[in-house]
Amino acid sequence: MEADDTRFVRCAIYTRQSVEHAGDDPALASCAMQRAKCIEFIREKTRHYWYPIGEHLGA
Image 1 (tube, rainbow, N blue to C red):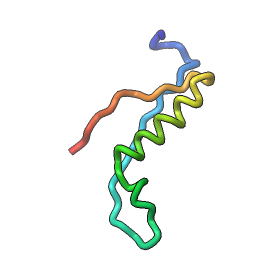
Image 2: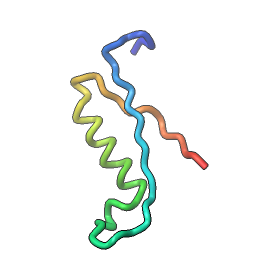
Image 3: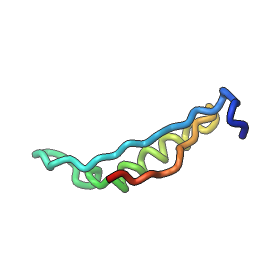
């Protein structure tokens, strides 16, 4: 993959842990679960040259 190849779409994933609200699905509250769902979605778009960028853990 060439850095200047405009076909490729770099996809960043942002997850966050929210405070619980009534009716929230606790299975989706985990940042790891949110990231996994996003990766799954991006991989469905590989024919459109989407790819996830590396993981960076913030403070």
